[in-house]
Length: 148
Ligand code: CMP
Image (tube, rainbow, N blue to C red):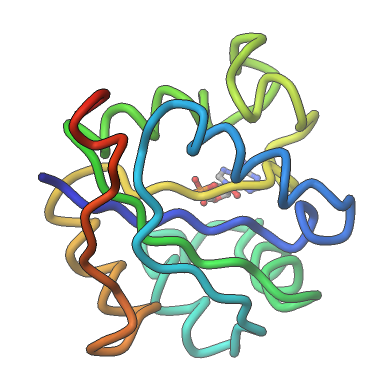
């Protein structure tokens, strides 16, 4: 069973979309195993997006990601990394298909409302970045037997 990291970004919180987006994951049958609201520091945003540090839009990402809290989620399920990326849709909302989260709720790449880990290796690093030991739970969900 895989676990992935999802961040609901500040525009999700500002627009009152937390519930609708969390529902997408619950409706799919995935299991939420960790969830918390956090105001991110410059340091954690710089670490999370270090591969974009030399891009001209990097200062904008930092300002955006620290402008209001995010909701960090740890989500488990069979093939969860690929499944969550599919539910999330293309990074640029202009290219995200209708029915995907970005396709339905976002318009521009600089406010694309959600982040999801792109591989098992990235998920392991990103989960450790946002969750301390003991903050990710392990439990049996009755629906695991039906959907999982
Ligand atoms: P995310 O899935 O969190 O991963 C990298 C982030 O960088 C991406 O979502 C966008 O928020 C941001 N990003 C990528 N390309 C651009 C761009 N051209 N302009 C602004 N932000 C970008």
